[in-house]
Length: 525
Image (cartoon, rainbow, N blue to C red; front, side):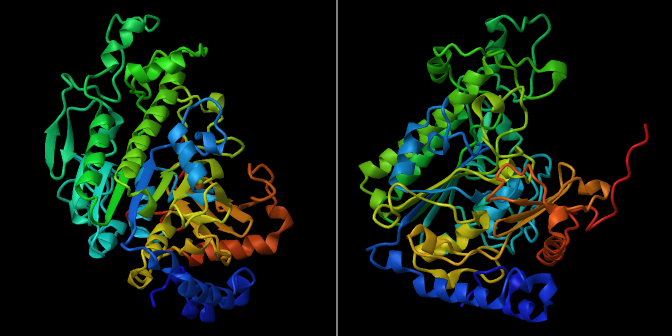
């Protein structure tokens, strides 16, 4: 039987660890009981299905915890996702793989948390692409392809440039259309997209860079000055069309549709027809003019643009859900929606205060506080997952490989050495042991490290400067992480510090300073 708990806390490790390090918080017996329970309950949902269920995984880009109507949003319209929430389960304590794009997606695709994953931060590999996941990693796409699924990815990949080991067609994806590189995806009106391993030209002449500013003589107070930031061929339209075609082409066999949409990541690019409904609301919407040349492309009405982008994303998702209904595939399709991290911290472009994008949570994209990594997540499987349900079970991106392999009836094929656990019992309405822990590290944005055990979350910030002080929060009582209770619980803080060290391995490519390399010295002024 494969390990479906963290290998850092296997039976062998438990036998070696001292009680002061872990057994106060995590007992070996509870882990073994959890394994046994999950083994007994596996495949119950898939057993009565005539064919294995299709899997549709939709991943938004930089969507905040409170930016869907079903998660409390009041200003942005998301009718299709709100309907999806009513038809399935809301996961209210689900965590993205990391605080920014590439490392978060690495956790999702490989089932390894950030202390074991190959990719732990964004790192470009010119001329195009990001640091690749290695051949040795077995991705979710590879696993499902091995089970006879047609596999397609449509949107932004970001896990290895062309001709690298991480290139999607080398990682189990049989059909790819979209952006390979996340920097390329900063423009919604590019000159080309990837069609498998070939360029397909878009009708943008010239293409619109995601980082250009005004031309000399342009007047930022004149709406006409913003025309140069609009293209003709909107890449997300092309991507959605290809995703729909993939479903049509594979309707008679099991398929895995991975749809990592680029929306709502800035730049603020959206067709005018989507903007109108928000313009008509009369929001006081000061232009984003890219002061000092910093940020993405200017927009005359940035609040309306951001809202319109999310509504456009919702429309694309509605197209997929409607097609599943039309082809009578909905009842045998698991649909998952989530986000790769929280709302962008670029407040002049995205007014996260106006939209209450992360609500009561602390932190934004780039932060391991809740607002940077707790993401809105929905799961639907009609007749298996109760409609209109919700769960506050603590879960994360590393859990999707064991969970989906469980749900399709192949738990024995989960690779050994992964960090996730199957949350299939929770999705199917059964009781489930509390997860042993949830770990995150992020070497960028000052260097950060967190671990959550039960309701307690330990946080380290500014590690790159040598700081190892731990903040401690009771997330159930203090969801906004405002009351640091570390001084009140010194023994717990010490245990969590030891645990954070035990569950990770050092990285030479993405060192977590000062654990993996010397602390950076402060610059002299």
